[in-house]
Amino acid sequence: QIHDRDCGSCMVLQRQTRSVLKEYPSGTVQYLVADLATPAGRQFASIRGVGRTTLLLFDGSGDQQGVLAGPQTDTRLRLAFDRLSGRS
Image (cartoon, rainbow, N blue to C red; front, top):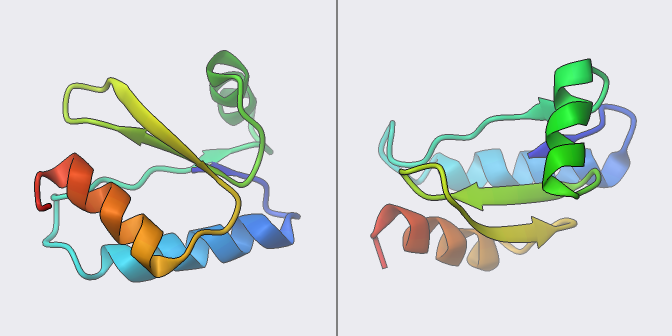
């Protein structure tokens, strides 16, 4: 997730994502945060061409498979994670 600590919608997306990920066995889906308050986080977002409140979806090989911008419904997050994990 591209995350800005001072962004309300970023916090919402982070809570939603972490809540849905609790439904998956450990290690099934990895969740990493690119913090825009750090140089590495800003660089990652810049390279990917995205801003805050964005969830980038990668497969097990590290290839980007999708982008979810803004807060999402639990159903939309589940569908995305199911597709990536082969659970669908």
